[in-house]
Image 1 (spheres, rainbow, N blue to C red):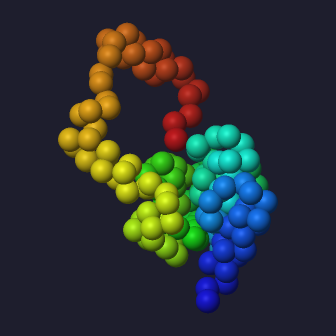
Image 2: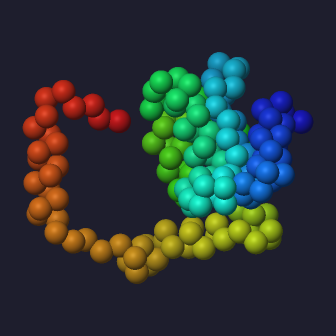
Length: 152
């Protein structure tokens, strides 16, 4: 068994036995060193964004004092959901290793598959609605006017 996946599984077990949330654990590795870890804490925090990957990203960013996780690899017990995948991409993590796939996760009662369907073009049309674009473009212009802004 891969040593980092073993750590992700151990992290998931911590969360399971504490009643924090589902069986999802994650570690983030850079240059052979674990720089972040986390497990699902949705129930513990009453927060649907507290997935294992999200918690590990928070931990890694805190430990590196950076929002940029370039050069990192992520090991997680379940295939990342769309939210986590988005966060992984935004953090510049370059490789993802997962244990169980979306169907495995669906088989134990989680609904990740629904969210992938909602991301289809037809699904997005049902939930995404552009509103007050001109006013929001003014906000973007205001942001662009700040000379020392830092994009990410």
